[in-house]
Length: 338
Image (cartoon, rainbow, N blue to C red; front, side, top):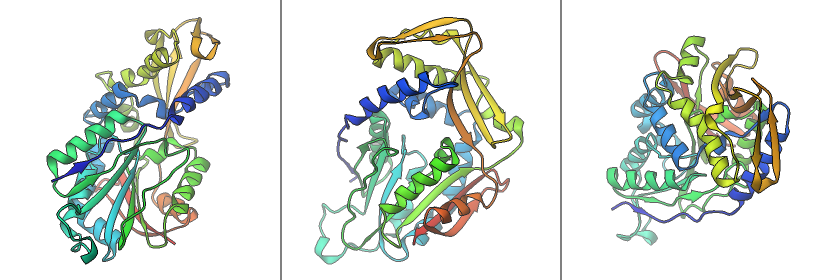
């Protein structure tokens, strides 16, 4: 029987939102951090995006994990039992492939822990969205047996803490979905170093990254014909209206996605369709937007072969293996903490 416990919502997320919005909208050019996308509706919209024909990322990474999950788990475990944590877990749709492989290969529980109440695998998903974590726990309960889900509502970029593994366990931390691409290169390295500082030597880290490919393919993935990504982008303004008593008109901002070859990244923006003033009453703040002025809402960096391994090495890991799809569109790299 799969088990789950209710996550404890951390109050720092609320204060972090106000601080991030005040700082970002006062900057020039204006920007907002991408973690603000993931309220309940934003998480639902992102799940819809992952199923769109243009959005190759999720299905490509899923295919790699479907083919390589047993090898990934075996290499991560090196004969030990695994405690699996995941940063930015979302609804954990792809993660079930790794959890199933882990449950299938876990050695028998150590004698001191033999009990019907002891799960085969402990899974610790970490995300800012409580609704996404609840969906993940329900999915795992429905699809897998022997997994104990211990979700944590937490902004992992601001104070990362992992639960303590049980005796005889080795930790495997997942950071898949190319979420690392949302960070500036220096920020990405800093984040991975903070993760490494929380791990013991020999613990494993699995990183999924999107690779550079034709510009037309990249742009289509972030500007789908059905307009789901546009709705996802604008929903950030809906969230600010609700949580900060703002009066954004979401349809007064156009969704823009562009490829920046100099920085090897897709950029998402919200572009003001006209001159307008927006009030954020909870912050006692008024912002004037000029026509065509933008709010930069997301970067998605794309990597070249070899870059993921170099990043992991600089962060204090020893790369062990990398798997890609036949087109070399996506890469999944496993490394061990030094």
